[in-house]
Image 1 (spheres, rainbow, N blue to C red):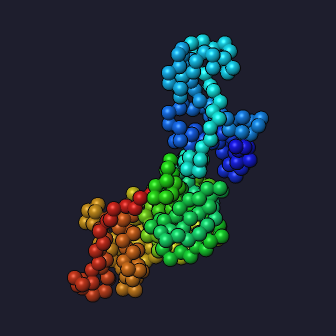
Image 2 (cartoon, rainbow, N blue to C red):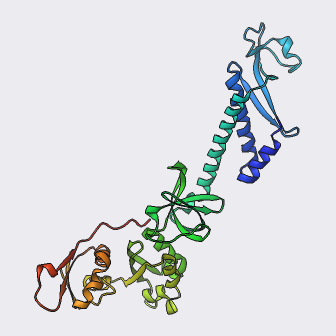
Image 3 (cartoon, rainbow, N blue to C red):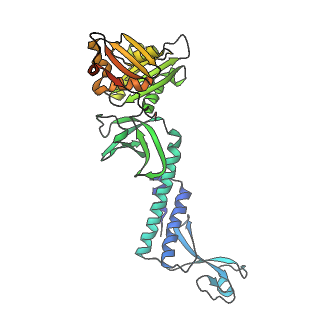
Length: 357
């Protein structure tokens, strides 16, 4: 059987090593012969000159030869190995053929081994890119998420790792964080992608803001409710550099590409400070806070005007919840006007921080 074209196609289309493909094809053909003739010991080679698969059976020279499948007499061995001696193992061309069932077995073995090689190549290509952002193209929508084309590989963006209510259209470019890279498919996918984690935001900041990439400006804390808002504490290691201004850029030139990537999601930038009261105050942006009073490091009462209350709380309590998570403080809101009523007070406790990747 001439397999030159088959091997060349696998090498060119799949980008596989030619010698590895030849070895796999020989392995598959050998499996087919072993299925039909289990009593023989086979050796299968590819003749690059003829493009043919050559099948041999291995036999030991014995006198007399009792096991016809695995032994051969010195006389019969003479045409194949004139100088061979008793006890030596020689290769004898095997002239019998295999049938449709055995050919199917060979194809199954070849397909399985090719998939293993492809999976290993994918793992080697992407293992060092874990926790980094890569550009791709939206391939198609699936029941549990989106398949994303990354060069010649397909990654998977689960719904749970997507930004809520984000409209993603097949064929459009997309940036994704490589969250997991498996040696073999888990749930049908090797590369798991992400857009909903704080790690995705951190990587965007490093891409768009050189000072963060270089470590001049440092991200000290970050919390996120994907699709709603991200709050970030930044500090500068240089007195000459304003961390917030650096992140925003002239007329928003640096933050705008990040906001565009996130759609409707907002970003609040907060300058790092050792003053916990100031940190709590800033973390409740965009609300204007009149006063913060710490009972201890874990509880704070915040006074604010009535018209600032809804801004501090945010949609479904998300803004104040993010502030609590960012600062690690239980926040109680108290309006300036009137006496405090139990029903007027809002308490939000610190929640466990979101994973960064």
